[in-house]
Amino acid sequence: MECLLYGASFLSGCILQNKPDIVLVNSIVESLLHGIHHPDLYQDELTLNYVNALIVIAARNISKMRAEQITANTDKRVIQIIDYIQGNIHDPALLKVAVIAKKFGFSETYLGSYFKNQSGETIQQYILNYKMRLIEHRVLFSDMRVNEIVTEFGFSDESHLNKFFKKRHQMSLTEFKKTKGIKVAV
Image 1 (cartoon, rainbow, N blue to C red):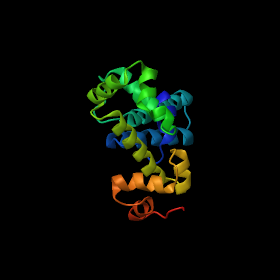
Image 2 (cartoon, rainbow, N blue to C red; image 1 turned 60 degrees about the vertical axis):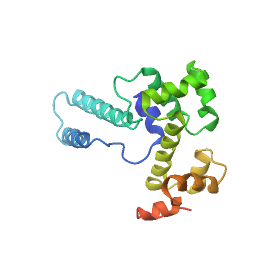
Image 3 (spheres, helix red, strand yellow; image 1 turned 120 degrees about the vertical axis):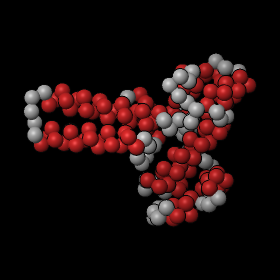
């Protein structure tokens, strides 16, 4: 539940990225619907277990949205750092290396090398990549206006956000949304 509440609260769109999980979720949903339309003994218990299974599958898919080298064997401290970054992605002041290092009891220099060794990317790369994924989701899957995205992610203005976005995609937010065939809310 913690992964869902903290990790997914900043995401939009479909979190199911693992194709076998999509099949599994469809099967569980069919079973839930069948139970609703054809109640039987122990239906409440089955429903509870189906919902728990859906929660675990969602948490697994959200967890896989972390840095590629993060595995089940990765040091738990780096996972805590990633959770902290994801939970504070909207507050640039809390994402400064000095603040993160102090929070987790590392020196700034050691935090940088530790994070890179554990995740395969620098802490700044991770923050920028994560922020970009969230912005892409907002642009593609929400009705948010560009100025709302600016405010949400702490950019100074739309120009600053567009510059950040263009650096990665070589196109503006509006062009990005148009190439995906979605109408832009300006």
